[in-house]
Length: 204
Image 1: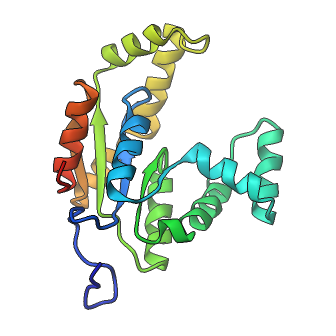
Image 2 (image 1 turned 45 degrees about the horizontal axis):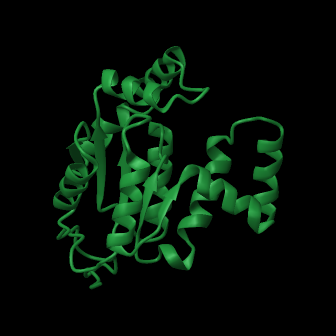
């Protein structure tokens, strides 16, 4: 991957096997995890979810991992400051050097600004933020079809409410920065994948 004159890795295009740094946005149940795995395989970069980052930190048994484990063991949510340390540590690993797909982080405007600072410190930029959009009625239908104990309609709609309140504002934030690519996720998995590839300039 060629470097730009200022030393940063140049070019937003994701084709030709180059690694890219992409954030996947979308409501719970939009299929981001499935698409992240497909894209990661095609692009040759890791698909990193919030849960994976936390599990890896704990498994490593480092000082950071022990702090994360203590918070999780107490049944508490990992706060933004600690989560930022986890993200910084994970993105510094060798397998993320050429890029990654982030699923589940950032979730709030504060986290988005933190990620921007982490990338700036590393001399990196995001290449794109892809929004997989699915109507709420379809998200509820999908969740109820799964039939899991935690997928009661009231619970599912509450997840959507929290998403709209906390995460949806990121759409405007990234649109202002010219990074947002919006995808219609209310289609077959293959059709959504094809649109993602096109949005990132990747040949199918």
